[in-house]
Image (cartoon, rainbow, N blue to C red):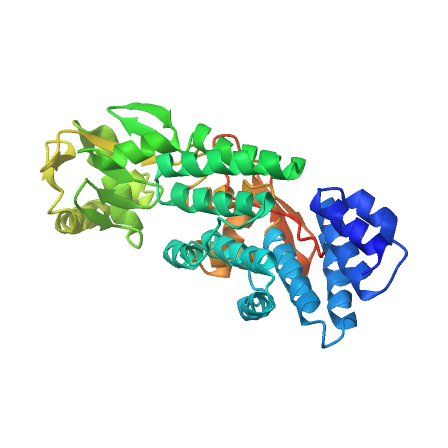
Length: 409
């Protein structure tokens, strides 16, 4: 490898894409194309970067399997950052196997990190944890060790293990200082903000206050009966009852929990559950039916008793009832999950959001259209190229995004 290629690779490893481009911007050989692609990715021109990396992969000879595999890994990272969640996991796995076979453990580990980050993004935490368990970070250089610890922290945050998350972030901060890459240090700082940003609201006895992630962890481990509006479940320390597919029952449970220890008038319950402004006998009959269903669902956690003016919640094993809600609820709750993903500042396609949320693409499109009408999100492009994005939403923690350079040396 000639001196200009080596110098450009070292510039990229140090987080200096402009310095790398000064050395290889006018060259069209395969190594230069690959380095130009990575430099453009670091500068944010992901479309151009992807095209350059594909050209580089085609330009490398069949004997240069490691170089081709590195291009695949770099392209997979671009897809992750641009929220193209439909990229081929098999291609990335094949590239990782090639790198491991040829002794390139650092880039093989990077491929593994990308795989774990994608699994985290689409909510497959168990699989992400199993995949990460196969990595031994001890021989990694500082930059790779930082990426590893950030992924560990991301899993811990999603598991609501804040102590483990803080420890991983401390190790990531130390490794980032050793790496001396400003962008990597900034990533650690941004990830640390998640633990110091309100992650939810606690509503109890008519009052609401914000909760940090560690306070959410403590609440869910307490003896309180929690009506969790973020996951649409009702739970105490021993039992969890999911109402995710029963929106009417969850609306009733939340209304009763917010009013506890008092009761809720029937007309209020009708408005919360059915949107009925003027209730007739058919509405009241339906309310009785739905309250009966709620009693059956919550029989191990609480009772629902009738009062003169409505209904009241009566917990069985605990002495406190609270509601855990999204940090902000300016729109319907079903849109809050979409806003939470868009809060990372990246542009998302509706198909990627549907995959991450586990919802149909049409459902996500309706939510995006509603948010766009309210001025909360903006579309970019048309047709299949359309993407949606928004500035970070105040009060939301962001999903973990860990872009890092992939120098070809």
